[in-house]
Length: 149
Figure 1 (cartoon, rainbow, N blue to C red):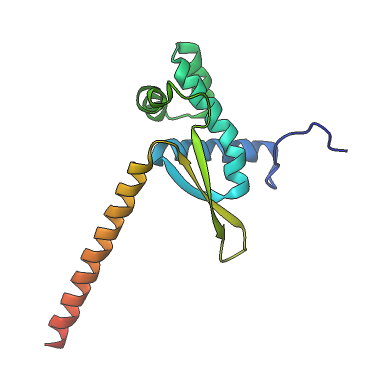
Figure 2 (figure 1 turned 90 degrees about the horizontal axis):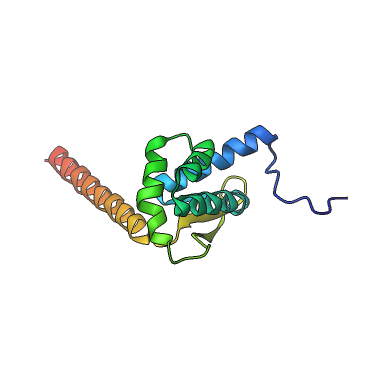
């Protein structure tokens, strides 16, 4: 029986699962929004929320606790100085999971895993990509017109 056994195994060994969740948390703090499977997002949510709560404390012991999980000192500094102060008035719920549908290849349920309050960062990235695509399309059309002449 599986009574009181919490957490998903995600089809991985313990060390692989810990590494996966650490990498998801690192990617989330770096990019503010990532696309992953729904199960991974739900499992990583507990790790990320715990780290943000430590960062809100802001003392040396909390910083060392976060450094146990996130190895990048640069990211930990960003977490403590930029991300955590945004959540001083908030008691939990620092992340959001938005379900997208199923992945085309293996039909796995996908979701956007994002930090609450950093939506503008994601919008700017999307806008930048859109502009790059438009410029590339204009460039290729101009090249094809030149080739035809």
